[in-house]
Length: 351
Image (cartoon, rainbow, N blue to C red; front, side):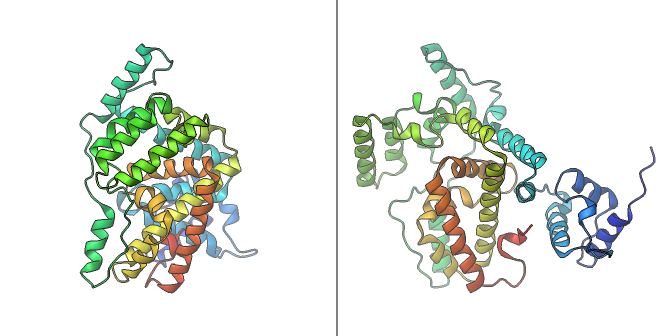
């Protein structure tokens, strides 16, 4: 079947992109529209002219630069969907977020999480957790120490975080973590989690004892702190948080989390020339609560999974969400104080 002739709008956008070094084909531009990354062409132009509006051109440039050389668009696509906040894009986000929250199950070949309080169901979930961890490669890095070593090379001493978990992927945390994802707090008592933390943080006994006492006092008051966390009901609870969120709330959460991730990545890149950026980021509590555990995301699917978890936490914990917004203000201040030679805050995340 012969392809449809490119529209005048498509050709105008392609010409504008070529002026910035990007050379997409009409087919690619058409696909960007089909995916919802670029809006309808009727919105592209200045009134009464064939000049592409600046915000449309910025958006198309963002897509072109992200997907070139065969790369996927990643969470930049989520950001674009969220910035529009249309019902169609909200559903796209919902579908994508749920798929990435369930990805550990799909990778392990777990079609459905066994439910129920019987011993048989409990053992089935434990077996499923074992399948999730089979042949899994665990990162061994301590991000703070890595950054501290690089900063020392240029004579900068970064702040030490005495209560920070050196590696959230510590082997001792993997089994309880997998069981928490499958069965929630009902399958994993707080004491088991604290014992795992003792192995992962052998030099932090006082901190862990304080946590243990907090849990004991809460239990005396009839409260299960672990069950109250965003992860307290496992993957089913996280999926439920996404599926029941209002469209506007969901889009706002994804917009904020992706913009924050983009801003952090941009500042981390700049820190090679201005390492004091890292020192200022590390002094805020959100370095521990977000940046080092879910903000510095890897490329590809693992990065999307991290943004999905951030979105759940944003929806489920208003105080955490407010702290992330506040941390965004800090990152904007650093963006002004340490301007980049090229690009904008968040790698150009301005829809």
